[in-house]
Image 1 (cartoon, rainbow, N blue to C red):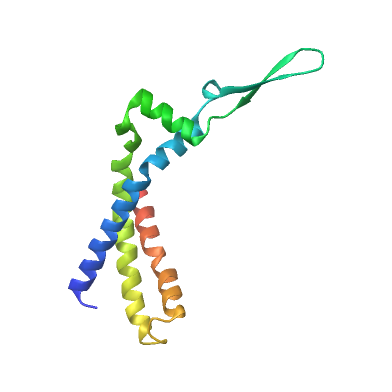
Image 2: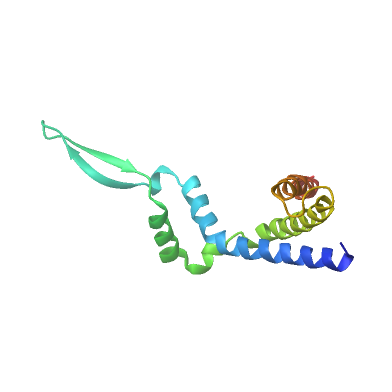
Length: 141
């Protein structure tokens, strides 16, 4: 594999990771809000009555659609992309390295196994996984 091919794979992986992070960022924001919401954000859904006439409030956590609606109403659409910058700093290089490592491994393994066989793809993917992981570990040190 030439240096040009490696650079193309790095660029393609970085672009793919970036697009994926942008598209899933609103889902991540909603998920994070739901995980960090306190009891005060819970809504009363149903009042249950007993035979004696006493009522009990049943408290349930808001669902993802309710959370999305509240975020859009109170903070606006831009708030769905909070945290995108730091996420891209980690995702884009990681995906770029993974994609390039996978392509390089696949090219090398095509000479050892049947070209583009299941074994080539599986082993290439398994070998490419540690590279972005090591980058992430080194960046957090």
